[in-house]
Length: 340
Ligand code: ADP
View (cartoon, rainbow, N blue to C red):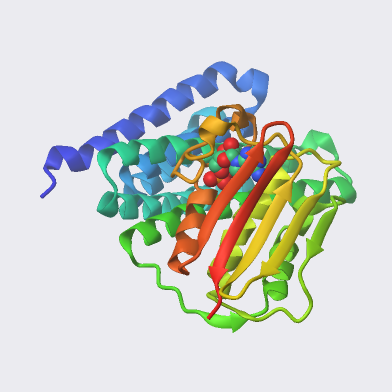
């Protein structure tokens, strides 16, 4: 059983974090404006959610709003607000705070059950980093929308909302990837195979990626009259999505991505080829490992989980995934699935 000290400590540290954030806010509020400071409170919420779970994180959200209002929103040292728009800031903060707390603590609970201490700390670093980027962007967008001085026109408001939506989708994908990973590791993942057309699978995958694809050329070669494959459609979609997403992510805009399928007597083979930077030889073996990222990819956002998830899904279908890559020329990921 948890000792009293262990239960109370997160709340004390959370209050300390809020105090520090408020102090920091006091110092910078003239320069960056109160709504921007909300972002730092959100980071405190994310940190607390990941470290101690939902209860302390939601408490942190609520106390943050109170402190923010009391110390940083005019009129100071009262809980009333001069400008009604702050009510939107408070509401948006509480909603984002609660969503993040719920997501982060779900992930945390699963980790607590199934991961070792070492993995736990790697995951913490990875999630806190990858949650931060979209969160900062969402907060920035909300701030711009709330800023009275900016006099945004309808077109601009739409663009900002689209950015916020895109970033929320990204946040959602990261959390889903983490949940899938923990499910797979704990053996909760059950696949249920049904016959399907590879063309439909690739079509659905490209549909999900259509915004990222934009004007990029995707060459698809699938033989006519190819036999059906037997897969769990949503999971295999996820496996292919991660690979095609990488092909787009790690190759420059003007280059094509090729998806080519071949059918042999006992297996279907899908090759996903890009003309990007390629993968150094020494990294080839490790890119399917959890959290492994090639050193020079650090400027592209990612968690190092995508390929590991794809591999687990493909292997759960008794398939195989491999990669061939020439640095500076590009990479080909090869997925093989048995035909029944
Ligand atoms: P990430 O979230 O980092 O993209 P992945 O598990 O999908 O994680 O990939 C692991 C690493 O493998 C990436 O960080 C990247 O360095 C490398 N990688 C994956 N696909 C490609 C590709 N098509 N071209 C070059 N590097 C790739």
